[in-house]
Image (cartoon, rainbow, N blue to C red; front, side):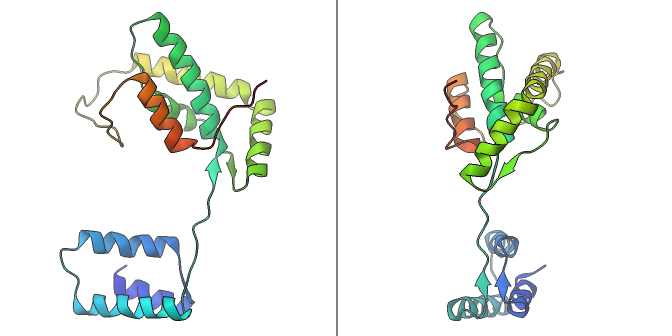
Length: 180
């Protein structure tokens, strides 16, 4: 869908969704130059947003509590392994493997996140531990496919501490495990 079509849809519906906004941004970033029609459509959209004819739908903030729980367990296990051996493990790869095999636990409020954490401790703790252990085993047993592959977010420092810090910042900026 092009800018003109997105603007027409927004004017017709009376709102601009986050995906529509992202698509307009992507088109603008990718284009070397916009056409006159596209500039006119963007001008029309800006006017409609300013007058309230079109309302920008806010993005809903949510977290997947399962990410926090898996990261916490993966960090603990990786640290234990790396203290006793020379093996280097990628926490991101391990967490992604485990997360792909676990149910998501989304929450939009702190109360909801607390509920999901408690539910996971009661019902899913063993499953999480098993999936992290399996992820580590698979990571250690993986062949060297595509050695030129690059991480989604390239970091200069490949130390475990910086990997863990970066992952925690990205996936669980407000997470602090409860003292039990």
